Each structure stands twice: as structure tokens, then as C-alpha cells.
Amino acid sequence: MTPRVSILIPAYNERFFAEALASALAQDFKSLEIVVCDDSAGEAIGERVRAANDPRVRYVRNPKRLGLEGNFTECLRQARGELVKFLNDDDRLRAACVSRLVAAFDVNPLLRLATSRRQVIDAHGMARADMPATHPVSYVSCVTLGVELGNLVLMNGLNFIGEPTTVMFRRADVSTDKGIFTWGGVSYRCLADLSMWLRLLAKGLAYYDAARLSEYRVHPAQEQRREAIDCITERLDLVKEARREGFLAAPEEYAAALERIDALAKIWAARPGVSVEDRGVLAELSTTITNMLAQGGD
Image (cartoon, rainbow, N blue to C red; front, side):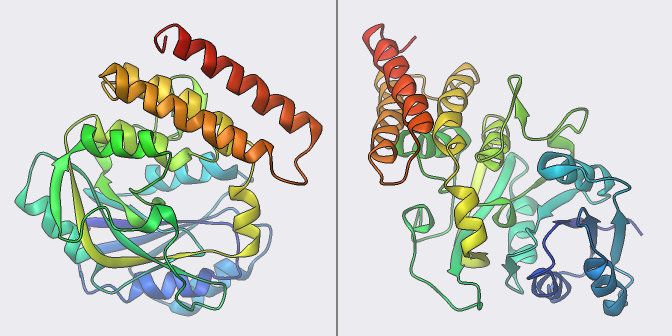
């Protein structure tokens, strides 16, 4: 039978993969498949899947390395379920995650994205304090206009929606004709998930579950990736494309989003250890934003 939900694990790093897979297998929702697309250099991930010996798991070994966007896109191409939930190979789902988000789709046909609060954990799986982006959007579960949630994210420069592990969406709502993190001709890396969430939010409503349904792991290798210069520079492309899609319609909203990017660029440029080249990139970005604001945001 065709599963209702596809949990997709674009696997690359074997260190935490066993925990991620175990959390998918422990879901209390029965009609699901787990698709593992292995983009790693070794055999450990495939061995873990075989050891699990569970008919719900489908293992795909990429014949060549596909990279971030390629592996996520291949996972989505492999999915058979109506509803899709990515699971990063270093994160974990709590047992009721899938069932609670599916229930939200069942009661509201206009929903295009369902997410929840998430728990930050460390390399050892221990709970850590919230970061700015993981503070709750609401203390009660709720449905909101997708554009309003997108505007909140863009004006604050924070991903309140969540990482790929946090979100569920309809498979039919995201095309795999090209890379799923490409929007408006830009292939996003640092803000890859946000580029997809905004496209979904532009189409309808969003659901936010106030319970912590997933666990977002923060560890040194990931923190280094998150601190790439792209995390600043991609924001301007994202804001401009989002506005073309109906976000930040009011001039003051657009200005607030641009000013937030400028503030982040200046904070980053003042940090010790930033290279002269990166400081130059950030200074150019600030100049661009200053000129845009002077021209009314255009």
C-alpha cells in the first residue's frame, strides 16, 4: 500500500545517523515510509539501514555524490507519500511528531506547511537552552496566514519556521524539475530551507504546533557551516524574491527586512577573525542596502 507519509533522510554524516533513523522508526504513525538517500563516502550508513531490518525503510545509494541540494532533491523524487517530512541525519524526531502534523493537514485542506517548536540538543543528545530562532512563535498551537509567518521571519532575520527536520508539507507542492533549494535563479545553501518554506507559505496557510516535536542538534561542525558568509549575503536575494512573491508588501515591512540584513552584516564584519575579503563583501552588501533604502527599497 502507498504510505501516507514519507520521512526523508538525506544522509551524509554517519556520526548521528543511527539516532536519526531510530527516531523515525519510533513514530506512532503507522502509514509511513522512511527513505534514506546515502551521499556519504563510506558504508556505515548502509550497514545501519540493513541492521535495522525494517520493511518501512527504503535505502538509495547515490551512484555519485550529489551534494546538499542534489541529495535533498533526490530524496523528494523518491518519496511516495502524500505528505513529506525531511529528517536531517543529525537531528531526531519525537514519537508523536508525524501523527500530530498529519492531524493538522487532515482538518485544514488550505494548509501548505506544518511546523512546531523544536528542542535544541547538543552533540551528546542533551537539551540546550533555546536560541533566538527556536523561541516559540506562539505558546498555543495555531493556524496563521503563510504570508504573515513569512514576514515575521524576514523582518527579524530569524528562521522561526525551523530546519528541514521540523516541517511537513505536501509532496505535490514542491517541484523536483530543478533543485528544490533554487528560487528565482539562486541556489541557496545557508538559507536553503527558508527558500522552500517561503514558496510554500506564499500558497496558503501554516500550522504551528506549540509542542516540541523534533530535536535540532547543534554541534561544532554544524555551527561552522552555519557561520558561512553566505548566511548573510543570501538574505538579500531571499528578501527580494520573497517580495516578488507577495511578502513584505508594505514599504515599512520591506525596509525593516533590509535594515535587519544591514545590521547583521555590520555585526558580522566587526567580529574578530573575519577575513579582509569577507569584510569587503559585507561592506559592499551594506552599501547596496543603503542605496536601496534611499531609493525607497527598490
